[in-house]
Image 1 (cartoon, rainbow, N blue to C red):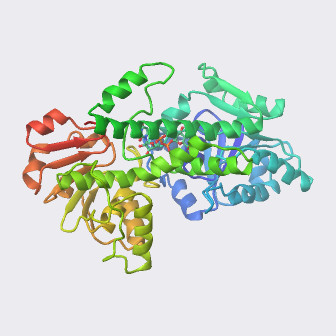
Image 2: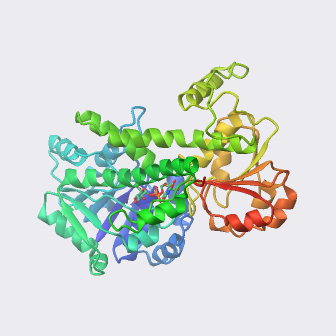
Image 3: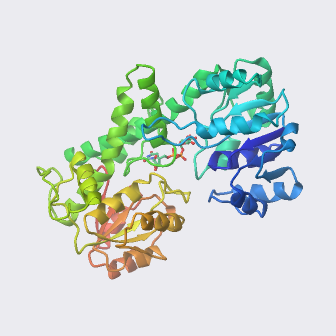
Length: 473
Ligand code: UGA
């Protein structure tokens, strides 16, 4: 089968390479020439474990190619997958301009039987809008929806062993074509769910939103554990062993991030408004997760200052700092999330281990670690940061926002030197194996706050740390 992917972002690149591995002739097209030049040289623009080992032989064999222009070569495609971005508009709704630009560009080159498949995450009814849009131009390509469920950091394994393959279409021909494409996976007894276009589109949003709800719920239970003396690890174990609940996505942490959950929840909330439906749970999850980094900063402050997290809080303005518009905006946001004005970290050096939104990726988009760093810097902390993969993106991002009081360490050990507190913000496995005794002798204060609950409390306490984690009284 000849397949073209439009858009070599995260989903397009992983799916394109892996579809080619399934035996199809795949072209990946992106108008970012620079990116395509690099890809042709076997250089990936993202860090994704295992992906390069698939890319190299497929490129060499010619079964996979990269293009930077729409041209007559598209005519040979049996199927075109659209995998362009659908970022948030200021309202939170999904911006569909790249989807429609791709449709415009490809429709003058593809053959009239070519199936257009929307793989990008799009709000329900988008595919029907595309069909109407094409009909108005007297174009009658079949259109299907095939949402993606890959996770960054484990996308290759997720592609080869998906929990399900979801297809939305009103056409038997389109369904059969997609079955043929995925045949190598379906024969492994992976279930294919075939439904209508709108249901497939909405199922993607509801899956991500449900997972995000699980995390936000767990984080709130962790708060309650801290106040009551319960233990979140045992609590989630007890919950998760109930098959109706399931063990996954019950890890308490600093809040969910990434390029999908935050964006998709906002878009779903907008979809609900558009269709005059109340989605109160979605609104609550957004608000709970927005609150999370502020709660983490309060926790850091109270631990550093040896006081109780349940003390009454004062939300008077940060008068001495609110002299510029930027600081006023920061203060307004801090007030919104109840961050008291006395919370200040001047003369405190905080080592932050972990910058990416989760382990296994170099992606810092909507990372809770970055948000926490910004709040700490706004409150005059000095940050010494380290991440195995996220250093470059973080430096670029924070420098553009004029954050200066942050030092980018080359190792976790050097980030911790002379620090008043060590904060674990991303669950990189290598942090568990750090030489914690050596690190202790080089810190000012042996305090660790583990926002991912990955370290061994007994071991760290036994060597003299004051170890704090999430969700333990
Ligand atoms: C998510 C979905 O899991 C994928 O199925 C989906 O295909 C993808 O979005 C997408 O829409 O493209 P991803 O964004 O890569 O994948 O990340 P997740 O592994 O889902 O993690 C999201 C966030 O939740 C991370 O910040 C992670 O640290 C946090 N998380 C996850 C927790 O805090 N606790 C958990 O138990 C699990």
